[in-house]
Structures are given as C-alpha cells and as structure tokens.
Image 1 (cartoon, rainbow, N blue to C red):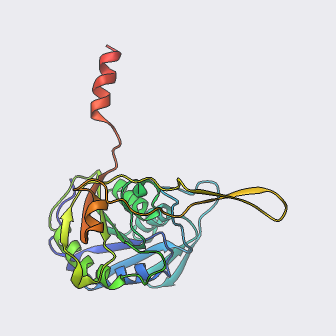
Image 2: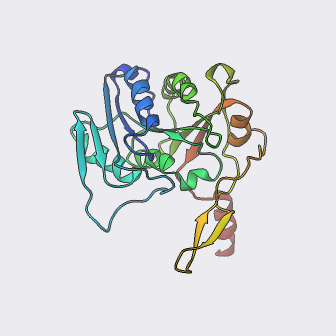
Image 3: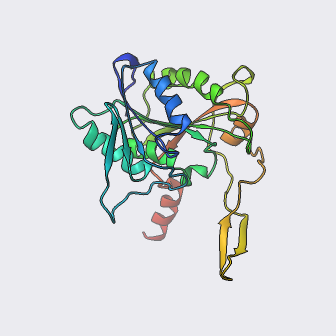
Length: 260
C-alpha cells in the first residue's frame, strides 16, 4: 500500500513523459509540480516516444544528458527515463511521487496499453513509487486546451495524494477538450473501451513497394456510462485507477477446476 502524501511541499517529485523533454505539456506539469514542491526533477526522453508502451531498451547502451541542475534527457523510452531517474539520478533519495505527462492527446480505454505516458507511470509503480499519468484530450489540429490541464492538475494532485492506494495501482488522469471554466467536475471512473489502429492506410512508394500507415484515431463513441471515455467527452476530468497486475481471478478459478 502506498502511504498518503499529505504534505507535498516536502515531497521529492520525478517528472517524465513520452512527448519528449521539450514538449509543452511536460513544461506545464513542471510548473504545476513546482507550485507544490521545491524538490522537482525531470528525466524524460530526448525525443517523442508516443505509443512505445512499456518498452525497455536492452539492445544498446543508454545515454543521459544533463540540461540543467534538475533536468535530464535520455536517448530512450519513457520507461528507460523513469528507471534511470529513480535508480541513477535520484539514487541518493528516491522520489516520493512520479508524474507523467501532460500528454498531448488523451489516454483512454485501450489507449493505455500503447501509451508511453501511462507506461512511465507504470514503471514508477513497479519501482515502488506512487505514480500518476496526465493527458489532455485534443480535437484534431484545434488549439490544445493546455490551460484546462494546468488549472485542474494541481487540485487533482493534492486530492489524490492525500489518500493512499494499493502499490500495484497507478492513477490515470484525463482532461477534457474544453475551456477550464466549462469543465463539469472531477469523476472517478473505470477504463472504457476503444481500439486504435483499425484504419490501416495502404500506399505504394516511388519504387513500387507497398507500405502502411496506422490510421488516425476514429470519431469518438462515448461508450458505456461511468467509463473514462464517456465522462471526458461529457466534459469531466477523469481519474481512473489502473492495476498493473493483469491476472484474471475469475479465469484462474475456472482453470483451477480444469486441472484438479
């Protein structure tokens, strides 16, 4: 069980993301974290690593570049970054909290299995640090409602960290694509269901060879009431606890009966 963090002012916070260390969302999350604590560190990928999921680099060495006293860029994945952040950069004193994001684009439904943003929080959780992922819903090429994420992120952090949660759980937060004053509230909801990548675009290159683009995200279906998809499209900030233990207890019982 992760203990509550009632006093974030004394907490050591590690920030990462999957959009790259120069992305606007991570700089915004830094500002939010620094409004709560003076001990904020950033260890994030050198370049964008969207949809790399929980990839760990094992076939080549990793390099880390110090940008300033508490900001580091890693030439690897979000998972690599959090691992190096906890085990190397902050080895003298582990972080009390890992934050990932703020991602440009929501991580809802089955998105979480592909998401590097969620994976960074998952790595923090596996390393024994309470972790929260933040994502901002966007609508195509429309301006991103960053002000909404910045306005609500601090309140989410204060409320969520004031209570403990199981040590095999990470918290996934999504902000709606609305101005901050139009948000309907904060709702704790379950993971919804949507599958990306169904729309494959097949094309031919100048040499006559076929290649594919994984298609863009399809038009949103609100889905089941009480899910992250339904709530965020209705205008709420969503908070969803995700378990890193994938075991199906129900299926275990059925299989156990088979092998008796």
